Amino acid sequence: MTRRPAALVLSTLTALVLIAGCGGAGSNTDCGLDGCTITFPRDGAAAVSVLGIEAKLVGVNAGTAELEVAGQRITAPVGGETQAEGFTVGVERVTDTEVVVRVRP
Image (cartoon, rainbow, N blue to C red; front, side, top):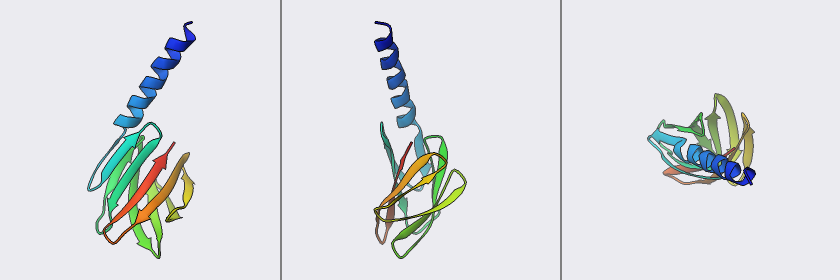
């Protein structure tokens, strides 16, 4: 009987940490239980702190985004995913004005 309340408390605390762990200037973030979606402006330097790490857009070239996640430079094509410091990073879309990235633990 004590396992259920403990599991409920643990999952609630985890959810609060994930939701509270998003933010940054120059970009929009939307965090939930399964990670954070970050919308970077394509024409400026923007960095965000998500899930305890810093993520920033370095550039875009021919449908591939170059990002720096937790100090590691990675590239990912639109619709593709890659790993960085224990996180899954995917590029959802690239437009003339923005780059939308998904970061999951």
